[in-house]
Amino acid sequence: MTVLYVAFSQHHRSDCLIRLPFLPAERSAFADRCKLANDRQLGMRLASAILIKIIGDFLRACMTVKTTNKLLGNHSERILELDALRGLAALAVVLFHFTTRYDNLFGHVTTLSASVPWGHYGVDLFFMLSGFVILMTLDRQSDPWKFAWGRFSRLYPAYWAAVLVTFAVVAYCGLPGQEVSFGAALVNLTMVQSLLDAPHVDGAYWSLQAELIFYANMLVCYRLGAFRRPRLTLAVWVGIAGLIHLLISSSENSVPVLANLANKVATITSLKYIPLFAVGMLLYHARQQGRLTRLDLVTLLGCWATVGLFDGMAHALVASLLSVCLFLAVQGYLPHLKSRVLIALGALSYPLYLIHQNIGFVLIRWLESLAVPPSWAIGAAVVLAFLLAALLHQLVEKPALAALRRSGKSVQRTPARILNPA
Image 1 (cartoon, rainbow, N blue to C red):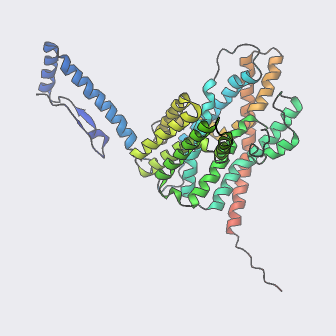
Image 2: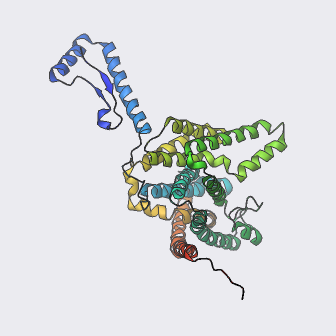
């Protein structure tokens, strides 16, 4: 009688297999039986066993995370795949803005042969990456001053330069519906202009406020010790986000005051985007612990379901696919992401995101007014966006980041002086 079984091991992937007839005589007898008897039932059993193996391998990949990178104890390691994903996300957003978003706001002179309506999901990937990186940063450096100074050094210098350049270009060249006053531009320098009822200098800046609020929330939660049990904390956080959405949707018509209050709470705390940040944090913690637990999987399902509550199930499906991509990337299953081109794209991702949209819109409108085909105008805008991003990266972002981090270290090293009265 042929033996067919599934064997699993907790430590070696090679032990996780379906054992089919392995002796030559058994294989021959097995083939003869299939040919002579045309045993459909045996064929169905074989197919079922193969399917069980595939599902088992998949679940094993999900439940047993590779830890070959040994991030623990190696605080200097940089996960290059994260940079590549960040660059691809920024490129997707750029193409979305120059094709679909521009068409919605101004209309291209002719119909585009190709568009990128899905590119806005790149922001979802940004949020997942931020969740991963911020929890990793806090694990390595939990000092509140150093964390806050590091985030300020990383975000604000390039952002301020982009705000001023974008405001100047739009004010000089004009862009219907996108011009703002000088006072509003100054408010934009805070990065929380929506909370201060000021319009964005560039519509792309809305996500930066969500990121900034998330950083503040993370610092507070981390300092309070909430991440001593990160899985439970994230599960509760995602659950609160879902409950807030249900409160908003259920009271929108019956108790609008309550709905508005809940909406403000969700905005101030970035609860709408917490499920996306939580995906990254869960995957980071699983990578550190070397396993993805059932609670992690349940929380991931909760994250995707909450995204569906806020933005529909299509968005939830995309979020789940992005989560799988991030999981595969950080576990080393996507080695092609380490290419130099993608790493360089990742280095430009933040300045590219900051500088591309309104300035690109200005160029596209001007070129299309000269009867340049939209595809050529979009191509020129992409090239200009990359050139400006490279300049912003080299002339502002890198030197400012280095200088501010040096000054932050010197402040930490300088002892406080005690002034004795004469």
